[in-house]
Length: 223
Image (cartoon, rainbow, N blue to C red; front, side, top):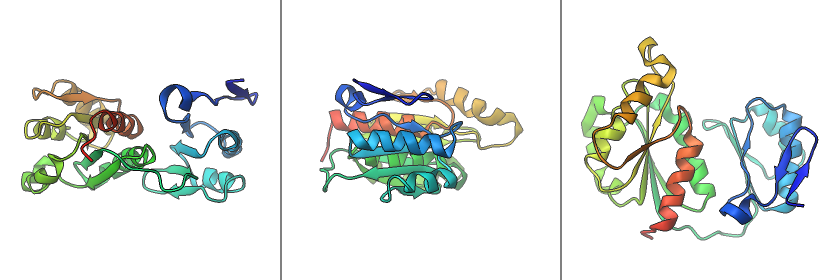
C-alpha cells in the first residue's frame, strides 16, 4: 500500500520514491497527538522526517515516539535524520533582509540541509544598508541557488538578482507595517521584479523556497 490511512490523515509512503524526498508534515492546524502519530508512521517506513510550523507541544509529543527528534525554535521545525553521514552536494545561500525575517529564512535553511545541500546563511543584509549585502557578494556568487527573504518593501531579491548570475528564489514575509498588508506588499514587489532570474514563492513559505533551491543545486552542483 503506497499510503497509510490513519483516519485523520493518509500518510504517503511513496513520496520519496516519486520525488526523492519524504512527505513533509505541515504542523499548523494539527494537534500535537496527530503530528506525533504521523511522524511515527513516516519513520516506520523511512529514515528522514521534517515537520514545519511546529510548536513546543508538538515537539514534546513527537519526542515520545522519536527520541532523536530535534526542534529548531527559530524556524519552528522538527527534524529527524537517521542516515549515517549523508553526502552533501551543491551550494545554497539563504539571505534575509532583516533579523525579523529569520524564522522564514531558517525554515529554508533547515529544509535545504535536510535535502543534503551545503547551506550558508547571511542574515540582516537588507538594502537599507546596501554595503552589508555587497560584503557577501563573493560568497553568494559561488552558490548554485539563492533564497532571498524579505518583508517591508521586499526589494532585496531584485537588487540581489542584478548582482549575481545565480537563480534567486524570492520569499515575501508578513513582516512590516500596515501598508505591507501582511506580506502582500513585498509579494507584489517581488512579482514585479525587473531583474531577470527571480522566481517567487508564497508569503512566509521558507519551506517551499528551501526545497526549490535544493532541487536547483542538485541539478547544477558546484561542489
